[in-house]
Length: 538
Image (cartoon, rainbow, N blue to C red; front, side, top):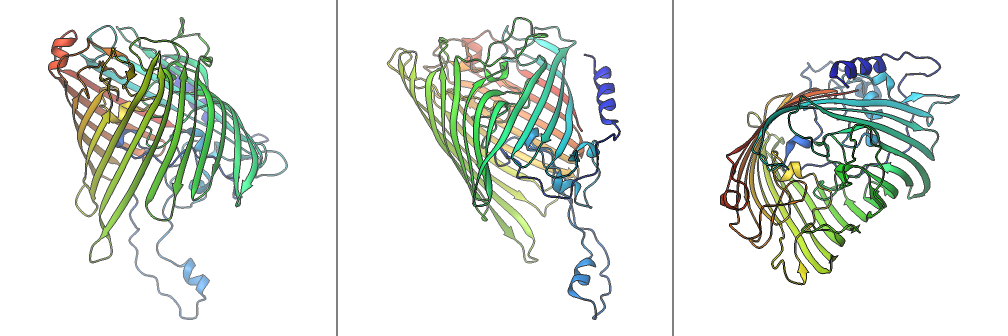
């Protein structure tokens, strides 16, 4: 479908007038909306949900009559409430429009009248919301580690998501989301995640089971996206044209102090590891029942700026793939994150320290071999809030284990499961976090209220020379042995966020290959990638 046709259809969708449906925002409180996980804030700012930075409004202090009541003084407060944060979340079924729409200081949204619409004789909890996203990305790349060898090419990626969210009552919810992803003007073969034509991305029902301490617990069945923690192991992979999804069961209970999720699923589309269909334009996504992905994920929250994740994940893959981590793998891990604010003499936050660390151990069996593998990463960042452009400098270290002895009885290659590798192991998407050392420095700048800039430098090495180098899809590249030197990458990304509906992003990356690439795989010159991405949400 051409971009002009898609844009015309989207504008028709947004121009639907009220019939028997009331489009006024609901003032009553909705039943608690399930939230997949605390917001991601990793080393790469590109994948963050865009947020406005709002400054207090400068106004003269009004004269207050000493006879006014306390309520009248509060009403005359010169500082209006700050606009709510971005209501669009990484998972659209977690969108939070109530606080945004009901806040008088929030700028209007495109498609706002299609959110939280009443139906039936009563309003809340009888609510329906309609929305979606249209995204276009133009890509120019050369010499990447992609299947088929190095290439110099330009191409366009187009993605349309459309959802309907229906709350029938306090105990029953239906959610359906369609996705259409396509590639055009390309002179190379598309990858499996480039095309997914009009498939069900999400289609599930939520049933409220009970309440713990006033907070509900839900059972979910159907097709669904998964997102946990900092997305290092479980992510919907938003960068891809085909967002990763699963099909199965999930139980979740979220309170202010504890999030509990337990799930049993099968991967569905190619982004989740399911093989590409013979006819990508017309094939229907179906769950791969030979692969089961299940787990329990706990997040402990508190009033302090600290967060702790504990998780157990089990991936059972009955398909034997030589030189690829599969089999039956159990992953136990933890993630800790904290921030510390430093105030100046005016009691203003002048600097912020951030620290995050995550580690996991993997055990089980892989095609007759015992599995013993793991990963560790740590991020330390510092932000100067009162300096021009509010610079943030951060450093990252990552280690993902590799196989010590390919001919032995133990497999030490870590399986990264379903990660957002694009955010952690280079924007150019050459590498996966298997058998990898990554040393990285990043600088974030905010030259203007709506402009963000990110620069990141990576130094990559193989964790062990006895294992393969693995590309972004987790496939081995080149031969065993050789140098551990993979190379260095520099990423530069600029994002202009007009409002929560619309943003434009441009990025340029260089990858200078090391001695391993020059001797163990077909040699190639420096890899580069340039892209411009435009996103419209409604």
